[in-house]
Image (cartoon, rainbow, N blue to C red):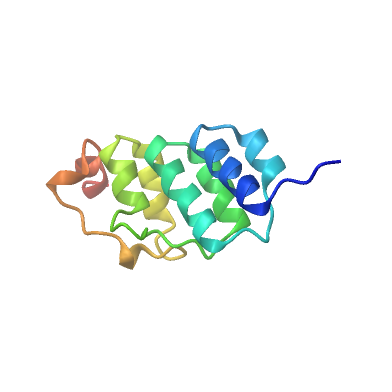
Length: 119
């Protein structure tokens, strides 16, 4: 059987998460993935609004960091793209996730920020 390099498997894992393919993501998952890969997958999941995959990633890697290297964050991506249920889940998990690193709510976070502020 041919073994793929770890980098290839990690890249496929991120793509599976981003495109909402939970089964593929679960099959590719490895606890030995670099933390930056898991964080990248989480950022992309929040950008695309895949709540179930975000919850699964959190279960698998509770030390997720909500802020990415390029000064964006999962909460902002969820809000900016109108993923209210995902943004609400992130707010509910704020004590367990690194919400302190997230940019504060402002007018540029998109269509769901008013609903979250009024919550």
